Each structure stands twice: as structure tokens, then as C-alpha cells.
Image 1 (cartoon, each protein chain N blue to C red):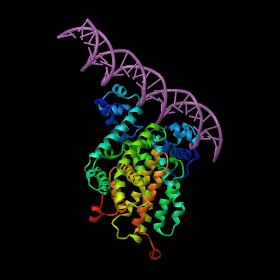
Image 2 (cartoon, chains in turn green, yellow, cyan, orange; image 1 turned 30 degrees about the vertical axis):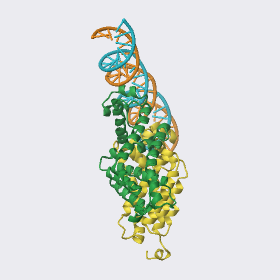
Image 3 (cartoon, each protein chain N blue to C red; image 1 turned 45 degrees about the vertical axis):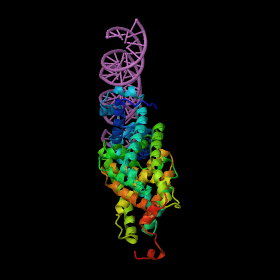
Image 4 (cartoon, rainbow over the protein chains, first blue to last red; image 1 turned 180 degrees about the horizontal axis):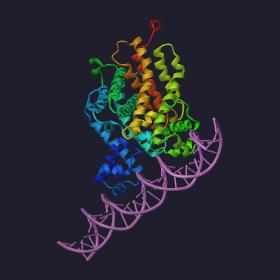
Length: 210
Length: 210
DNA sequence: GACAACATACCAGGTAGTCGGTATGGAAAT
DNA sequence: ATTTCCATACCGACTACCTGGTATGTTGTC
């Protein structure tokens, strides 16, 4: 990838794609839709991207970068104890639900469902983006596991995927019900489960080594 | 709805729609795709359905009916204790994962994600279908709750939605990863959580009244 | 012969991608 | 300093194609 920062129109198009795809889905979104939302012309679109699929791949990468930056800078991420960071992640996801549905749902989850058999490259990009997000989360889960449940039979990886799956499923119900009530309730169930996996810490084991 | 049982071609079309939608998604599926899969002509299609959207609504209803029948006749459903039926449901869902991805994923979850802003009627049909499936499941959850966790603060409804959300999220990862490993792991996490909500029964409280 | 259940050719609208062209800004030549 | 040159960014009309839906015809059956 080039290291020069992309032009304004290109970024506008990528951001527009994020929004329109999450609202109308991949296949129902036309190039003109994206151009209109971005406020640029079709000529500009095809200057920056060879095809609609190429834009989609770029948009998936753009999404991964911006979400990773968002979570990295979120306050929960600075908690001292890994367990607090894991639970903080869940709380943070719950806090975001105060918006319109297309604004808190996941681009990659939306895309992959429509393209997994028809557009292998997009499917792979979504898989990669979601997996790398989970990999980051896994670091905290693993650290918390070492501290509170070192001998448990579950893996931090499986818990990472479980968390993401609950989120993705919650998004589907948010779309079906046009609201985030189910998502919110799901996240409290999830939190409860995570608390039980990482047994409630006491002052003493909080003070324990690293 | 008519009480006469629908013609063979109509059923073929509804079944074909189920399969093709789950494979290619709603918007990417053409009427010709469905006709070809069903082995009927376009003329037949538009004889039975006024529009593509009407077929989709019928397909959603058809899906709800056939899945409800499937679960009602599944062996787990005949367990004596409601707790066993709830856990049996999860195990049954896990057992189904031995197939190709489009065969075990949920039509309604797929449809709603693509249509929730653009096709209100389809969105509503999906919501209705998923909610009524949960309502059936809820009966067992509620009965199990009365027995093992009568005073717990969670509602059987929220647990029903949580179970479905884990499933829907699992389907997304099945699509992203082209396999059901994550789904399977998710279902064991889910089972563990449900077991903890409905505390492990002993011989004595199994024998307890009704 | 009337009606349902098809079959097939066709059409109108929409869409991805193309193509010739313009604007702009910076480097190079003079 | 001024002119020339060129690459990048952008514009919008146009095209070839696809797709939902229609119109019209055919077959079988009660």
C-alpha cells in the first residue's frame, strides 16, 4: 500500500461506502449512491477505484484501521487490570449503542454475509479484519485468564470469538427490531458470563504479581 | 392465507428461494436464479407471485413454518425436564452444523440485514419469524427458570434472544471462515452459560414437583 | 370452453464501467 | 520570470448489459 495519505475525495468515498453499505447492504448499494453520499462524481470514483469491488476492499481495510484506532484510544483501554479492560470493552460497546442502527453496526459483518460465496476477496478481507480485531482483544483476555483462571479449559481465542459473535448477533436483532434494546440485554448477559469466567477479583489477588 | 395446499411449482420456488438467498444474499439473487434452481420458468414464477418481494415474504413465512416443524419434531423436544429441553436445543443446533454453510444458516437473519432500511415489509416478516421462534423456546426457558432460578433477575425473554443472537453471530463467522468451528465453540460457551443460569440439577430437585 | 398453470419473447429502466475532455499545480526548459 | 509540459484529479455523457416485470400464446383439465 502507498504511504502517501489518500486524497480527500478518496477518503470521502471510503467513508460514504461505510455508511451506505451499512444502511442498504452491499449488493443494493450502487456506485451512484456512494458518489452522491460522498458528494463527488462518478468520474472521480472510477479515477480512484478500478471497480466497485476494489472500493469495497479498500473500504474494509479503511474500516479496520479506523475502528482499531477508535478502540485503542477509548478510555477503557487504559485500565490497569486486563480483566477490567475486557469488561470495559463490553461496556464500551454497550455505550456506543446510543445511536442510529447503521452507525453502530459492523461493516464487515454486513459485507461478509452478502459476499461470502460470490466475492471471495471481500470475504477474506472481512475475515481478516474481524480476526485481527479479535486478536487485539485476545491479549487482554489471555492476560486476565492467566491471572484469574489460569487452569480453565477455555481458550482466550474462543472467548474472543464468542464476544464478537454476541455482538454480531446483536446487530442483526437491532436491525430486525430497529433499536438496540436486545443488544443491550445481550451485552449484560455476556458481561455476566465473562465475569463468571474471570472470577470476581478480590483486593488480594488484584495485588498479586503482574 | 389460502387453506388449499400450494402447487408443486410454488413450493419448489419457495424452497429454491430459501437456498439461493442464503447462498448469494437477497439483493444479488435474481428471479432467474431462483427459477433455474427450482427448475421452473419465469412465467411460472410470476404466475404464482406478483413481485419478487411477494415471493420473499412468502418464503419467510414458509421458512418459519418448516423450521418450527423441524424443531417441534426434534428428539430433544421430548425431554421430560424443561432444562434438558433448553440445553437440548443448543445441542441440537450444534449437531446441525455438520453441513455446508448455506444449509445451516438462517434465512431470516440473512434477509433482515439486507432489507431492514429498504424493504420494511420483509424486515417485519423476519422480525416476526425470529420472535415467534424465540417465543416457543421461551416456554422451556421460563419453565426451567421457575424450577431452578425462580428468583433470578434475568428474564426468559432476554435469554431467548441471547441464545438466538449467539446463533446469528455464529452464522456470520461461519460465513467469514467458511466452516463451523467458531459456531461450535460458541455453542459450548453458550451451553456453559445456560447451565450456570439454570444451576446444575441434583437428583432431589429433579424429583421436585412439576 | 373456461380456467389455471405454465412457457417464451420482449421491453423499459437501471447500473457498472468507459471515454473523451477540462482544470490545476508543479517541475523543467529557456 | 515566463513559458512549456505533463501527471494527477476530476467531470459527465454515453454504452452495453442485465433484470424485473409484461404480453401473448399454449397446454391440460374439469
